[in-house]
Length: 536
Image (cartoon, rainbow, N blue to C red; front, side):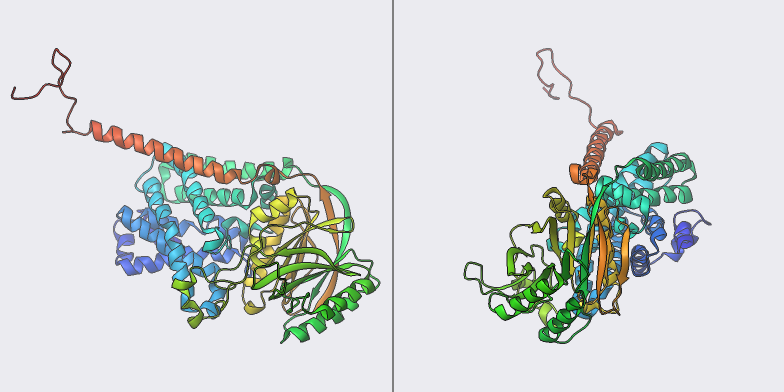
């Protein structure tokens, strides 16, 4: 595929590449395939190295576009292919609506495709090549930021997240979050395009590659490291696939009882581990409290049920609830960021038909209003529910508020046999590296995993085939990472680059119009200082 696009970019015999790309639908199909290629860098395949060159075919195709409009279409169809590939596991649930969502979000890459042609098309000189190395990664990051809005599906499949198991990338994440990793990965792809397609720009291309290598090495060597501060013994209860809330609760109860004598600090059950409101079912709360007494540790459960609290807005909540030996402690976190279509339907009056073609939520869940840090003895725990672990700002806020351990409760039961469980679990490594705090990712059906303060794996990974109660010695740490301290500074830097580029191009456009042959010059002035009027 790369060689085909290279010919289309003018690297092969004249005309051969363009002939191969003739026809708008053939070209659109190639753009979609090229856009899907980066998805192979994510779990389950986890070809992390591929991310550093996976954008090259897509960029070569957009570069070769005969017009800016066609380049924008290449960006759009490539974005469609990318979004469909990283969310392909949604097809059994949303069916054709998955294609609709991918097409709508894919349009975000249309301006990026136009920028690729603008900066890399033809024979760019060193100045334009350097500009491309700055602007194209910034443009990509702007797309990631926009589509990360919860209402558009959230930050699932950010390019930097494909580097979750690469230690230098995790060190970079501690400096600037997943955003910094995405920026540098796109910069590498841009430099490779220049090396492949633009012989006159090889010096800046090599310089760009050198900068990214130096940045990674510098982060490895000098980025502040979390300081060890003891450990906590946390157990994860993974009951596996069980039909019915009652049967699932009974299995969780049995698995938790097997932990007696393990000297635990906390036991964590997965998302939707309790299917009834505990205020309406005090018998269930009493059974969990009895477990807490037996194992000698509080139990963090997740309730997915209609609230019976008269002070709360009526509806179904997903809530992390801490239960101690005497019953519920009063610590409760209601999930704030809901999964579009899975837990609510955006603009239900318009898009409600999605419930008739897939498994979209028949009733919208209720949202929580604030994040919560829970006190578990001397341990401070920050809960996240389901895909909230994909949002860097949420884990960052919990770290700022003093959480020593982040706990992500998830299910992914609907997506057994797909890439979704592995993709979801991998996000915990990035959140740990960003915050310098360990992350416990506990699920009903796998994949459950624990990551230390540097994003390193701790203990065994519980795959989707496992039914287990696993104890982890979770390393704790102190200190504040640069990302927690300074926030999303790579995003702000990227926006400044784009604004600066737009301003410079705007000024250049004005200058070109004024200096173009045949453009009217300034009017002649009379001795009285007023414009001369011909014919008078």
